[in-house]
Image (cartoon, rainbow, N blue to C red; front, side, top):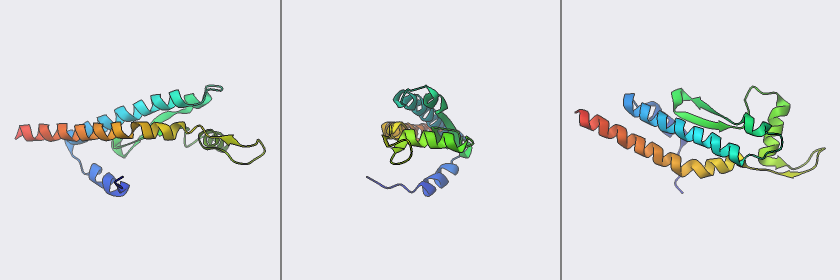
Length: 133
């Protein structure tokens, strides 16, 4: 598997202009929202609270999309709950549990689709630029 340096890729994506940026941000937004739907399907269903907390966050003017299991401003006990659902609990007063890994599986499932969408968006933008002139 080829290793991609995230910092270099972010710099390259930030340098995109106009229509190219628009096509890429649309592809990232579509994949991120699809990731939210998949993560909600894979999330364990006890009270429905875990599914409700899954949402999308965008940074760098839409060039970075993330599926998040809980708000970053949530109280510490809620963050601990979300972490123990995703990764399991190895020790503590409530015993041990296996993690559900719904966010991780969502990332694995959508990685190839996201790469294809971005590649198609870049090709589409390149064709538009070439046809203008």
